[in-house]
Length: 476
Image (cartoon, rainbow, N blue to C red):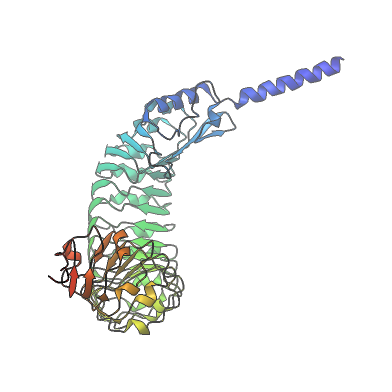
């Protein structure tokens, strides 16, 4: 009997101990409830499970270490719902959660300055507060958080300079400050962050030359510097990134000079964006070595012939538009790609009959831009074989076909065919498009009801009806 009672006692003890150990620490609960009090709007109930007296280790977005201490907060917006995000500020009460090693707050409407309490969390390694509305300057002493391994504040409204003390964050593998309002030069001290695999500073107002300090980044796989105001040439030290770099994005700056031939050594390169700069002369022949590249954007520069022969087996996205090329034909390495979804060759000196083009695959096309070339024939066979087409731009060519024979895919949003030889009537299905330009063709008949201005239809043979002058009534 005693043995049975002893066994029951042990079971009750173990059960109560397990139950007690499952409850999170009182400080963690207080800190998290303080955070909740700073949230003024939670229409989709992201924090609905955060209730006093319940085990905070079971709350939505909370991870606990050994089921006792909170180690991570992961709050992602519910993008499937129109109001699936939090509104408010980040309460400094989170400093009570002393074992926190990661904070992940994505796609919300969180406002306020950089959360100063983060300095008081000694175990914090990962900060991802992305796509919110934090603003003001980054703290000058941000380098004091030397234990950080990832710092991402992208998609906020931070302004001012990147603090020079960022050089002290030598454990960082990711530094993501893109999509803010930061200005000034890139601090030279970033060269000390030799463990970086991801450096993202795009979509800011950064100026000056791109520093020539990349020789120290032996692990860098992603470099995003596009959409800034950088000037000068591509620094030579970028050549040292060739073994591992997969994404090099330098588009939308004011870079000058020639495209360096060393870029042809980047055998791991997936994406290369040099668009909207001031690069001149020819594209290096070494680009023929980029056999694994999927996305290439050289548009809006002043590049000239000859364009090198590429040996890529499958290009997904290509944009060579608005340079000084005279390609004459759509390149064979594009024609034979089985996975291409975006082809933009506007003003590339293409002189061909579209009926003679025999691409290996058309099914995946989302975007096709062949504007301002000398392309004849009909695109109907091409466009009617695509199920996902979003945009087709072919203004300023010699295309000749009946517009009524064109299947307007349900996904199509943009259709521009101005200054061609298109004939027939305008179908009702164009009313669902976002943008439309059919001006200066040979279209005729009454226009269907649409939201488009007269400029989308002027210069045709005999189109009539709103927004153009009304059609003439027979007998009058």
